[in-house]
Image 1 (cartoon, rainbow, N blue to C red):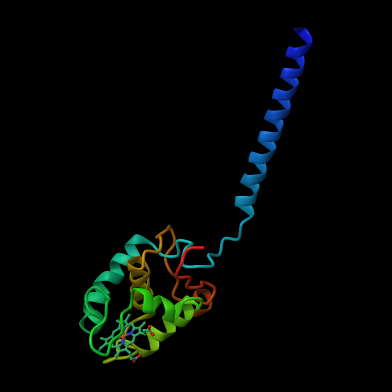
Image 2 (cartoon, helix red, strand yellow):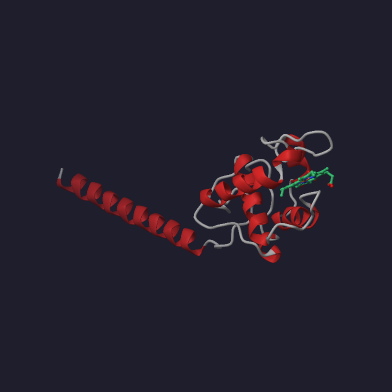
Length: 153
Ligand code: HEC
């Protein structure tokens, strides 16, 4: 009886030691993870930013691309399967530049960098990507590091 309880205690101690080592390792791993987000699933914009983009979209984009982003006449949808297929695996830098230089089609290049980033954040929000603590940046080089990934892996 005495011997059994000693070995049980030993197993318990070993178990606790192993558990703490594993827990410590996983905390270390999350601290060491790169801070740069790499896809649209990594919470790359904020709710507040998407809200600003909502207002900008209504003012500058909705009349052609429809209020719900589904497109109308010659203006394509900015959400849904076709849009995702167009941009899947490309970078947010590419999409940002597409909007910044070519849109709004009637007055191209008229929005500020900040406004373009906010509108893009709104589009990501509508596509169902998660919001987070940091805003979508306005520099193309940084946006090029974030990949548009339509389906969560
Ligand atoms: C005057 C109408 C008009 C307005 C306003 C407008 N667009 Fe467009 N947009 C178009 C048309 C037409 C196309 C397709 C032809 C082209 O690429 O020029 C297009 C294409 C796009 C594309 C490329 C879609 C794809 O899948 O390749 C994006 C992205 C886009 N617009 C975003 C925007 C955003 C964001 C705004 C507001 C800041 C905006 N557009 C305002 C007419 C418009």
